Length: 186
Image (cartoon, rainbow, N blue to C red; front, side, top):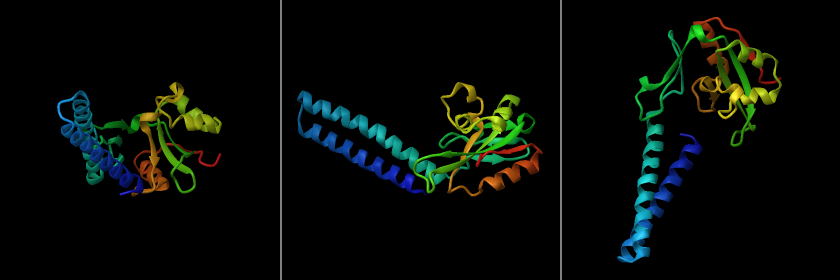
């Protein structure tokens, strides 16, 4: 469990308690408009924040891997509570190259996080080889149309992962010899 997970649970519990207080305030307020509105907002908060607490606690307990490499290809497992088979698989035949990128992010020790991107098209491979850093960072962002095809197969290598970036690349290359483009420092 990371600090972020712990704070998410604490925040959900606080919001759940506030929602319960809204319900209690509405019940003690009687059948007035204010009392009814407090109760309605309280029950809505209980439903929303209770669901959020359930999902965040379930994801921590389930401890599913984000990335799996097997004989079939690269697998992005589905998040809990969906079944694992609901995840997506990128066959090894579709992987043209693997890019290792580094991006500045808040909340990390050095302010940077490594990413591994499984590239499917020659255009993305060329972009990974020749582009400047802003275009490389765009490969990790969902809302950039030019790199939207790379995003489903882009993985942030978090500190709490069992395998770090060099081991991921080694495992992938053991299954299929693909070029590795290391742009973490350039």
